[in-house]
Amino acid sequence: MTPTRLALTALSLVLVAVGAYSVAALTPAAATPPTAVRTVGPLDATGALQSSYRITRRIGDGTCQLGSFQVGSAYRCASPQARQVLLDPCWPLAADSATMICQDKPWQARVVEVHLVGTATGGPTSRPASAPWGLALGRTVRCLRDVGAVLRVAGNLLAYHCSHHRDVIGPLQTTGTTWRAHVYRTGAHTATGEKSIGWQPVTIVWRGAPISGTGQQQSPPPAATPTVTSSSTTSAPPAPTETATATATA
Image (cartoon, rainbow, N blue to C red; front, side, top):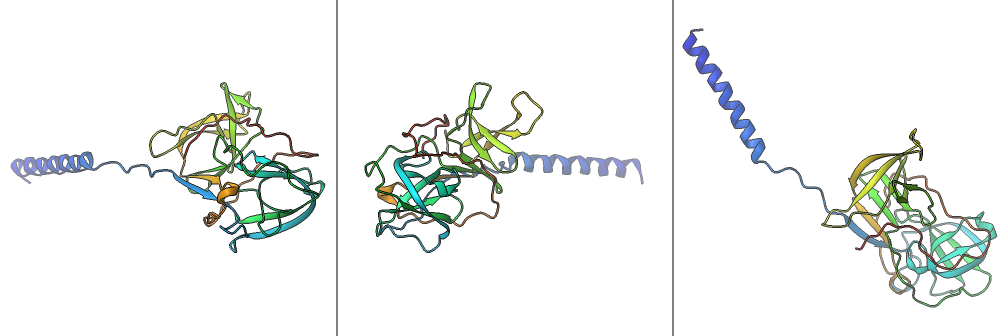
């Protein structure tokens, strides 16, 4: 190949490379999808259990009080048959106010039916919870709000326990259309056992339907089921207080 042809070939390669770079520079980066906010509850608009929900257990000797830690305008219940686990949130059936339907995780259509010893205490309304009931990070990680957390990392309180050895610590960033959570990896060799892996987008936010608006359809539960830590009690539920510091508004 002659020097002239070599020079032309080299020039052509340079022009191709410059053109490809220009196209890439002009192509906008994929935008992060906005956070979806979903309100879920096991009862329909008439106060009956929705057909998409499945009762996995029936227990008695329940005592319930208005003021769900997870929802606000719902109930929380306790029973010796619940193995010291606080059932929260719970909703009264319209056809039988002495029966509560309690749901552990907002992304699952499994519920517990609780029969009360007496009448549930508290009026029909209560202030909403200060933070969402649950979060989804990406396609697989699911996070349940920890309302009794005492662990602090860098001055921030643990807010959510998640699947895949993840925790969310500190308040959520709720500015803009995409919310973000400061995610930590658990079991790390640190003083707190938590290691920051940075801020990550929240794909879904779940809130519980208030008693006055239980006719909310449940979204199909994701395939992944996280392991979470439930609050516990051996007696009637305490007065409603909020302990988690994560603050979000839909």
